Image 1 (cartoon, rainbow, N blue to C red):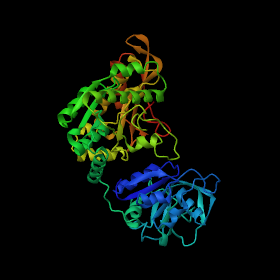
Image 2 (image 1 turned 135 degrees about the vertical axis):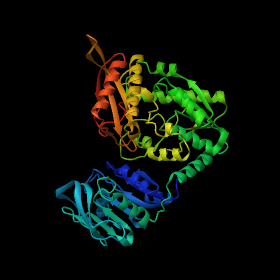
Image 3 (image 1 turned 90 degrees about the vertical axis):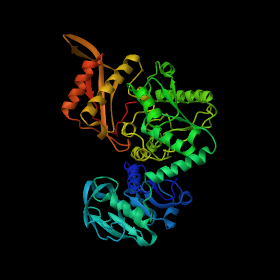
Image 4 (image 1 turned 90 degrees about the horizontal axis):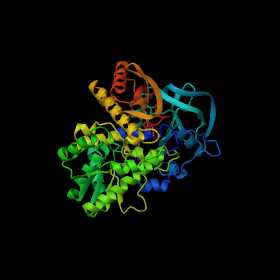
Length: 512
């Protein structure tokens, strides 16, 4: 972990992870932690600042989540956001009540002081509000530093104790100067230096790998994606020829992917890569399986078995390096936060009891865009740095229901067409993911002069920054028309093409 830390205590707010991201954009390391993390633990971690996130509860409810009260007595700067402001107010002797006029959305904020939190911020800005409660009476020594029409206590502080609160959400893009407000807190009030950058991340990761692996040998799973490839290059940088890479073809890859990946890894990056074609065993194990979680479990378990077998052929390995990212950990409920598990990830959650490997995860505290930055710093080619995220279970999570050879073929061919059209139209690099989904639904179409029953293919194209949230992409109609025409004309067995327009949340990006 970096020397300087801003801890974000998660009270279940929909924007909690955005706070962490915005702090990191200020080149200061931040981590999302459970709301009940004790002051003792935070002190041991060397936290230089604490942020209390928003949340759906009301602080006066009997079951409302609360932080350790010792946090407010440590002279560590604290910033409460929305619920966090209200919680700090309530716990320190103030009073919070429901407001008759709720504020949701863009709201004019009038600032009264520009000496610290609002340094360099205009006196009137647009903020993003989302609250039904407000701080009616402030604790002793607190003062108001900003107000809105319906919330006189829109920002408060106790400068002597370094305690600050904002009723609005500076982490949301709709708040003007939101990042500057966060920067004022983490670098000005907390005194953190802007040192969380690709160079320092690489140094920290290499040191972590060396400390973990010591003199041991490491086996790294590589897929050709930016996460696993960056992991491999970092491990190679740390321990040199004590690294061996394994590329497993589980029969669920995109069209032409195996050949392209091996050429990039062996040729461009000079990695020592062992190619394992395990497609038959994976597809055999997946026969008859319809449940998405069961698919992921089977694939994850089979991956480990393949690595175990391969490592015995290659030599003795104590460690397995994985490209686990921070969103993977969060979505698998690995942070201990109040969030429920969204989906399991094949590379999250430790090893099965029967495995002899220990795990190294040098990227597990990073978001995807941070990984891309350090990949570029490490000299990885654009073909890897800019490629869209591809799930570890591969096309198995894009085939809804039982995985059959026909559905797998349709998914692979249709997805290739989606990517080809977007690349030709120069849209690919500006999108997060673009692919095709196929399930058991069928519809009648007219192919040639005959009616024919065929599969419905759903095209999924989204924009995102880190995969935690995503919005469906507003693709030009003529581009969608070209995709549809090519899929129905070139992929045998498809009669209809639909376009998915549900964002994440409430949906996930991948269908399974």
